[in-house]
Amino acid sequence: MQLIEDQSFENIDFSVKSFDKAEYENCMFEHCNFSENDISSCKFIDCVFRYCNLSMANISQSIFRDVRFAHCKILGLRFDTCNPLGLSLSFEGCQLSHASFYQINLKKSSFKNTILQEVDFVESDLSGVVLDNCDLANAVFEHSLLEKTDFRTAYNYTIDPEKNRLKKAQFSLSGISGLLAKYDIDIS
Image (tube, rainbow, N blue to C red; front, side, top):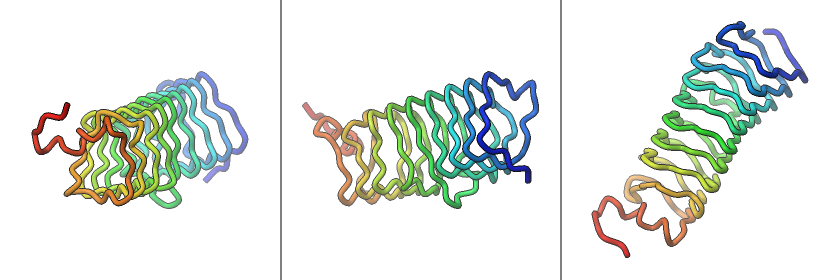
């Protein structure tokens, strides 16, 4: 596999120009369009994606190690199909709705100012993760490991404490209703 190091890719529409299957190390992708493209079996190590569109891209068997996404549109991405070895992701200011993290270990990941509506976190491990100012409307948490997860500034979440492990998880007083939603009670 070809190694591409210390390169910057700007304003490239990969739906028009082909994307090389390679190992990208310490690369910057800015204002690039990967939407619905095949970027499977690639390696991204210490890379940054800024203002990119990766919606519905095929990332099957790709490796993401210490990869940062900033202000990206990432709708419907299936992280559950990428290579989980060494997975480490950071999201800031992203639109990440309809993504799947099914059975993924996200312990080394961070989420800040990100929209995570209808995201699949079923059986995922978010231990110690901070969900800083994230919109979790209709995100699915079931049999998820949420120990020491910080939800204090997250909002719109619904989590069933009986179906998830929440030991030492942190919540704000205003977010308590998201833990009691299944009981259909009125909290004022």
